[in-house]
Image (tube, rainbow, N blue to C red):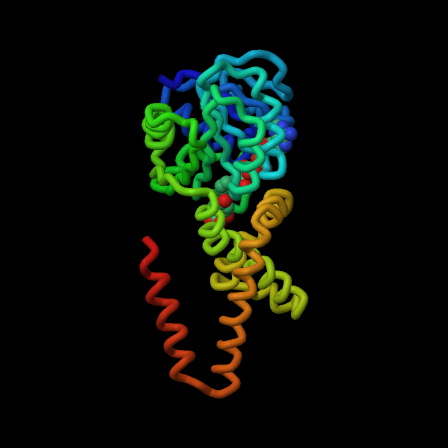
Length: 280
Ligand SMILES: NC(=O)c1ccc[n+]([C@@H]2O[C@H](COP(=O)([O-])OP(=O)(O)OC[C@H]3O[C@@H](n4cnc5c(N)ncnc54)[C@H](O)[C@@H]3O)[C@@H](O)[C@H]2O)c1
Ligand SMILES: O=C(O)C(=O)C[C@]1(C(=O)O)C=C[C@@H](O)C=C1
């Protein structure tokens, strides 16, 4: 049974997990964050039972969630290990997995169970103030357990955490994970930022008249720089290859336009409409 959790990094995702656990389970949450205001607010709201800016004592945690920016996840995982009991589950929420999993594998003791995690939910906003107990409802929660994680341990985590917070567990290999999120999250983020910079630099006046279309396609460009710098740097090879493929798609479209190839333009738009409408 999972009774006690520690959340390291009580921001948008860590804070949402804390609120979801508090709303949907009886799991008691302790938090670690360098931001004292977040700890204070979460304690006042009854979301956490205890908060510290630095953990240097034994904790009775059944599960630990590492929810810092990707660049700090390995270090935070390493630092907390001496304070955990045997059999504790450690999981993270990082948006990339290969670098994290391969680094953690190097030092993780056998008696600690690491399950790489990635909730496919979020927003462009940051911090505990924007956390939402219902953020994970109906979203896919991608899971990558290490080989030493026994079936019953994984089942316990899925049944007592993932399903209770309303998410849909999906077990996946970490290379496949990074390839998939490269396509549907990382490249779109770069395209959104590229489009924003392109439009602003082309005409800051045009920017003033932006309506729904531009706002929808560039919302995620408002996301935090630190979070996205870490994501992009830890999935560089996948992203580079995809961007090169994307360049080809764009050049093809330029050719259709230059050649007044209306049939190809029509097929291009019709395909996109059809594919987009398959997303529920
Ligand atoms: N934002 C999203 O949409 C989203 C979705 C899924 C996964 N993720 C992943 O979740 C993680 C957190 O992202 P977020 O959006 O919640 O960011 P965030 O900035 O809202 O939260 C990060 C939290 O970590 C804390 N923190 C930073 N360094 C710390 C340290 N050394 N010790 C303790 N706490 C520290 C910050 O104070 C902050 O509260 C990232 O790894 C990101 O890739 C983000
Ligand atoms: O909806 C958003 O704003 C998000 O950025 C969420 C989003 C994404 O869909 O790309 C961002 C990063 C994550 O790792 C998972 C989800």
